[in-house]
Length: 109
Image 1 (tube, rainbow, N blue to C red):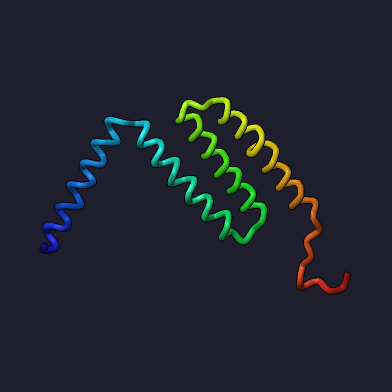
Image 2: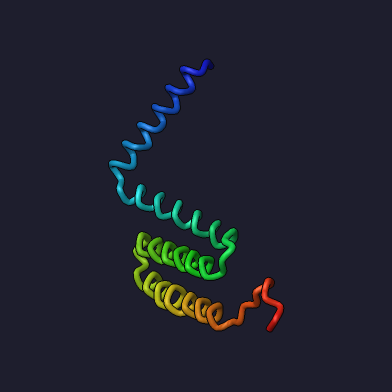
């Protein structure tokens, strides 16, 4: 296969994927939601700031709750939002804010 055929095949695949997603908006929304959840999960692990990690974790929990809504499990989605996004994330945020953080540069204290 030469480069022209490869590019043509890629464009044909993209066109077919776009047509499939245009006909099924739920699948498109799920793919976008899954991409956001995966990106946020990676940012939870790689973020240098602890508060940013806590809020990225809240975004992951929210994406999981919306996924439950896609599956028509509204009760589980609401419980996920209330317990994990509401309670656990706020608990993480408060524990990070109330923990004393030592600064390496200040040794006078």
